[in-house]
Every structure is written in C-alpha cells, then in structure tokens.
Length: 436
Ligand code: UGA
Image 1: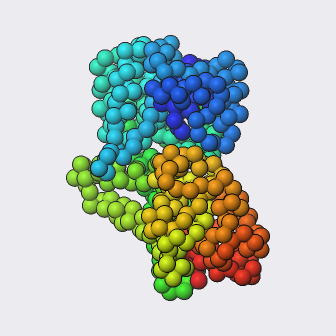
Image 2: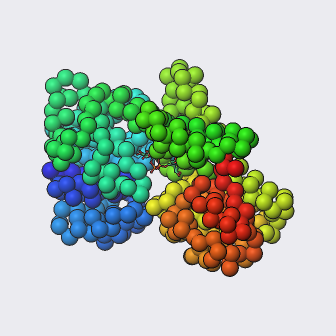
Image 3: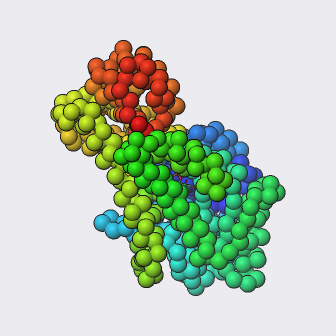
C-alpha cells in the first residue's frame, strides 16, 4: 500500500521505516528541513536501537522517501498523523496546534476514499472534530489508531505491537476503515495480535488511560518507597512480593527518581485538563497526586545528596550518572535525571554529568552544565556519585574500580539499580530509594 506519515519525530520516523519493513511504500513528511535531510540520508535524528538499520534498508529498497512538502502525500491512500501534542505553555492542556495544522495542510491533497489515521496522543473528543473537518472538505475518512510504542523498543513495538486499537466511524464506513487498517497491519493481524475496534472516543481514551495507569503504578511504588524509608522496609522486596500476584504484576513497579519523557508527564496533565473541561475533574483528581509524588522523588534524590555531604554542597564535586529519561534513549524531555543534575548545579555543586547517548541533547538545553564523555571521567575526584538513569554501563560499574577514581565513597542509587551489597562490601555508603 502507498502510505504517508506526517510528522517524523520519535513516533513518525519509526512508523515510516517500520511500515516499509512490513511491505508498504511510504513517504515521510515533516516541516523540519534538517530532520528530513538526515532521515533522507538514512540517519535518524535521535537515538533509537534498531532504527538506523531498518531506515537504511527501507531507503535502499526505494520504498521510503522523505519530504518537507505536504503535497507529496498525494498519491498515498492512507495518511498517518504522528505529530507531537506537547503540554501547552503555562497550562496543563495539550497543544493541538501541530495536529490541527497537519490535518488542515493535508486536506487539499486527499482523494476520495483515502484514509487519514491519527496516531498522536490527543484529548478525548479531538477525533470527532477532525473527522468533521475532513469530511466537510474531502471524500476521505478518519480513523484513530493510538500508538503504544516505548522509546528504546520502538521498532519492535511498531512491527509486533501487543495490541491494535482502531477508533472508526459508525456503520458501513467503519467497516471499510477497519478493512483498510487490517490491510496496513496485515502481518500483525495474521499473528493474531489482539484487536479492539471501537469508536473514536474510546480509542483516544485507551491511550491516555494506559499512560495514566502506568504513571499511577510508578507513583504508587514511589509512595511505598517513601513509607519504606520512614519505616526501614525495603521497597524492592516489597515490589517483588506484591508483583508475584498476577493481578498486580511486577512490571512498572521500580521505585526511583520517577517518570519523565515526552509522554507520561504531559499525558496525565492533559488528561486532568480534559476531564475538567468535561466537568469530571474529580474523577481523575488523583492524577495530580500521581504527578506530585513523581516530582517529589527528584527532591528526594537531591536531598539525599545534600545529606550525604552534611549540607555542604557548595563546590563539592558530584558525578551524575545518567541524563536520559530512561536507558536506551537519548531523550531528555522532562527527564528526572537531567533535572537532578540541574538542581545540584543550582546549589553550587561542581556537577559532572554523563550519559551514553543523551549528552548532546542535554547540552543544547543546559549548556551551563559540565559533561563528561565517559563514566570514568565523570567519576574522577567525585565526592558523591548519583545514578539517575539505569543504563547497563552504570549498573555494571565495579565498586572497587570506582573507588580508584573518586574522592568520596557515597553512592546514591536513584534508580535502585545497583547491587547494594557489593558496593557496601567495597567500603561504600550506599543509599537507594526506599531501601534500608
Ligand atoms: C510510554 C508508554 O510506556 C508507552 O506505552 C507509550 O506508547 C508512550 O509512553 C507514548 O505515549 O508514546 P515511554 O515514554 O517511551 O513510553 O517510556 P516508559 O518506558 O513508559 O517510561 C516512562 C518513565 O517511567 C521513564 O522515565 C522510566 O524511567 C520511568 N519508570 C518506568 C519508572 O520510574 N519505574 C518503572 O518501573 C518503569
């Protein structure tokens, strides 16, 4: 099938290359000329494992090209909208301007029978409005097909999704839209991937409620970590023990510095804003608490460093290991790790931060920070070591080797990812989050 993908960020670029991998012919479109020129050369503008390989092979196959001109979407029969919906400045609500402009720009190039497929995360009610706009000025239909990919696993999650959700129009048009999407996702359908065909509102809500649930799960365990800290219990063992209950499950129960990134934080805020517009603010008022617990973890990590230095942070050298919001990503949007580094810098500490992939993005946002290319460089003469992104390279650090580099012997494990015993055995003071 001939597809267009409007918006070539984390979502769109992966989607475009993955659709070629599934046998389709794709044009990826974005207003950012620099991004398009990199993608055209087979170079992703961000770090995502597996993407460079499929991008290069897709371009070599002649079935993937990129353009800054929306007119190039003409000729494709299915058009994916994968632009961003960031938090509005000074507000909790989502900024829908990119989605609206993408759809408005696309409409003149739509042919009768084309299908526009929304993948961006939007407040419930958005698709209904867009469907009206599309049908008023073209013979095309709209589907809402939320994306559940995780950064770091984006290629696999796109090619082999764990479920498919289609929000489709009512009646016969819904059946037509469903059969088009089934053809797009033929390989996932053949693999019996669970499929939910529903209305627009449900499809939109599935996405925001999934992210809200994940955020709640993380804040729940972080709240337990706070109680564990106050009572001498160990939150990692607690998570293991409750996680054995299949109704609870162990995944997303890792206590630490909390969630960040381009999705969970802004999605729970946009959800609260939308619920308030619907007159149901009370129903999701708990998400404000989820947000507050999450942000408190950053304070806790900073406080732990200050405590470790007996309150004298000024001019102390602190190695901050991690900047990305999670491992296997170079994304620093709302990253708790970068936030901790900045706050410690703000307290007058001599922070040296490192990350296997996220230095360039961090430097762009915060040029005032000092960065080191390697962990060894960051650790040199450090009074305190703080781990805030659980990259394999940091988990595998050998405490006795680290001792040869640092001045101090205190490690703050902001991700509960280190083996406390081996650090203590090597003479270190180890402090985790909610661990005795
Ligand atoms: C999230 C969802 O997991 C995806 O399903 C969704 O498609 C995506 O948002 C989106 O809306 O586009 P992502 O932002 O890539 O994916 O990251 P997650 O893997 O969900 O991690 C989010 C944050 O939670 C990270 O900062 C991570 O370190 C933190 N986290 C995760 C914890 O603190 N503890 C955990 O146990 C798990």
